[in-house]
Image (cartoon, rainbow, N blue to C red; front, top):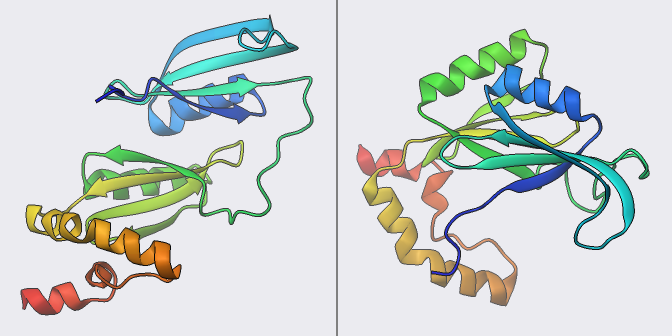
Length: 181
């Protein structure tokens, strides 16, 4: 395999300090690196920036750029707000629920938990308007095997019809509980 892991994922932020402090406070991420330049190394464009990096655990790095000379941040208005998000794994549903309570106590609006059968999630926005998801895995090996067996068939059907294939409808329609009964 060519790719070993994701080196870092980078987003834009309104304020680098606010962003670092928010991720430290609410998600326990450690601030690991800051890079600032007056010129973009890859393009040589004169564009001052602050680039901050946070430890997202497991060798994963989340980074942000503050770009003070660029127009204000905005989002892709043709894409629903729920689509573009960063999903971060937590160790358990208990941790997920405790984090939801802590975020809400800090005044952060949280959606969920949402039951996706193979994981449970909560959703919220960071101070830059980026949607975040915290997810706790709860799949069984059998569930993952069932999903693995139909993934290509589902993709092929979607490519032909652009309609949601029903091969894994058990994930959200309640039929899995009936099978287990």
